[in-house]
Length: 374
Image 1 (cartoon, helix red, strand yellow):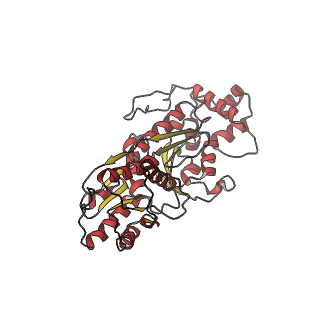
Image 2 (cartoon, rainbow, N blue to C red):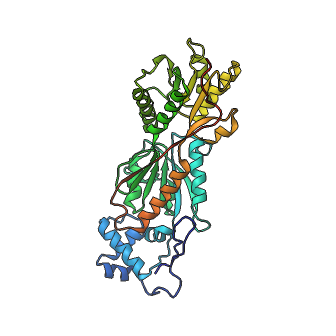
Image 3 (tube, one colour):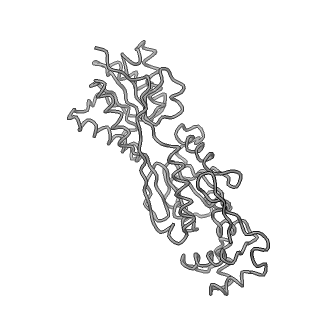
């Protein structure tokens, strides 16, 4: 009893049944009788309240299916979203370790892409933070507000994932997509760029240009963050491929910030022999390297080639334009929403599988790399 129209991104524009399209006499008692459960169980499910009544996932899906088939539309918004998840908002969940997510170059691209992909005006995009360390199963009262309020039914997680939060969302019958990390849980889709191939492409490009003394700004020492681990794995693979040992003295560690990139260049360019090229695991740190090199009077490229990673907006604000590896933030956002909608349209099977999607990366050749001077 749900009418559909084609949406701008392949999503169907779902609509609630109109007056006259469903039986006005349908009540919770009617639904309870049709499903074969108590009226209290129906109330508990539709209002997301714990009345001390245990309801299995199978029964929950059966209740929602019967409600939809009958065209039952509850008065409570929370119940509507739980019964018709296609009507709920998209909630972007940002981990607490990101900081100001709107100012983060990579994640701001994801936010912008989601705003353009979700069709307007039927769906809103909300932004909420979550605590990386908190056990939300033990403290459900601290769940992000869009989940508690029942206004959101589509969830996209960015930053360091919280497994308990994913579990809490899926237990309510909603799918989750995680960007940039892998979470192996039913109902969760992990969408990642090929991080290892990104750094492999970067180092291979510098090798082809003739660089052998390459400085690498490789992120925090001993980092357990998946992207950092994979990017450094790609660096090692590039060196192993050509049987060249990595110059340990040209590797420097630290948070991938502009300031640390500047300081890394100051340290490494004071050594002999100087590196002829820099590869940084972020564009913003590569911009810091570029700033210090120019202060020293080095010509870029020529005296020093600089290569970044991500293809964030910072590349438009440095001169010369930065050669970098494109990490597909926009493509990942679009793919995430497609996967969320796919799971919503298949409530019987959409939440019983975990899935990982790896998207390709590509080298963006611009003006900051060339052959080394003789």
